[in-house]
Image (cartoon, rainbow, N blue to C red):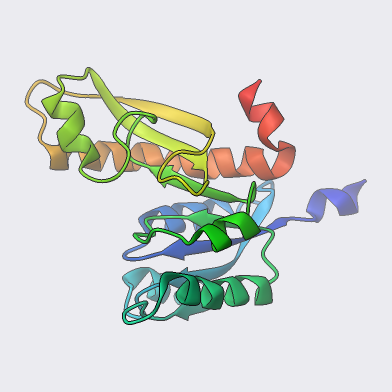
Length: 201
């Protein structure tokens, strides 16, 4: 069985900016025991700083501005690049675009996202401000399967992060980001290894 153990799931990561979660996935993938490898980092901004990092680490990249393009048209281009790279899964890592239903349907059950709240709380933006304003004891992050509804798919894993008495949204965001970097690589590894049943049991 040693050859089978070496076969790694191929993951494409979609980013929009600095790609810190992408970097966390990439560096986790360098461990021999990691069951996935990053085969492509793609961005909807050709100047996204995360692309430079991925290139420096020897990962194939693709960057194209979505401006002036219909959503489904742009997603079809991304889909072509992801398939060209031979990806089995897609990991969204700070990808700030809503995806077309067509694209989501093509990758059903094979596309994950990380979101900076304890879903189903605080879908969408400004999650840290909303958690603080609500007087919550904890913020946190969630990894979920992507569905056509925003931040709505089955949750695969979460990490709670305590909210301190004098927390600002930025201070909380910085701690949640550390939790994100830990959680995403772990959940992605479990998911490609065992699928959803293992994570939800």
